[in-house]
Length: 117
Image (tube, rainbow, N blue to C red; front, side, top):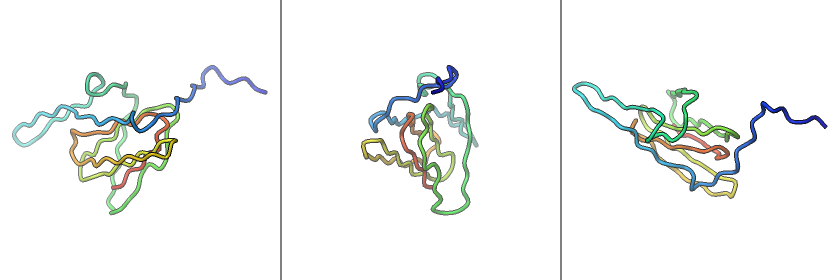
């Protein structure tokens, strides 16, 4: 049997739905624009390693459909509306509607996530 590599991270312990958090980021309106700040610290209790965006031009599109073993994810809806569905290993389910760029969902590792656009 081959020993595990010391570079391979240990999977996170199984999370449950109580570990999913709603986050509100600070927003500063100004004439003709609005500034929303996303940064690690008080509002975001995890370090940020990667940022990506998803856009859909078709109604009833699903994204996600998987869980991550090691990393947490923060979901923000920049425009329109996204319904987040999170499921845990106990069969529980939680839903959050995101429609404001200030609002986010922090999803820990091992939570099955789906997004409906």
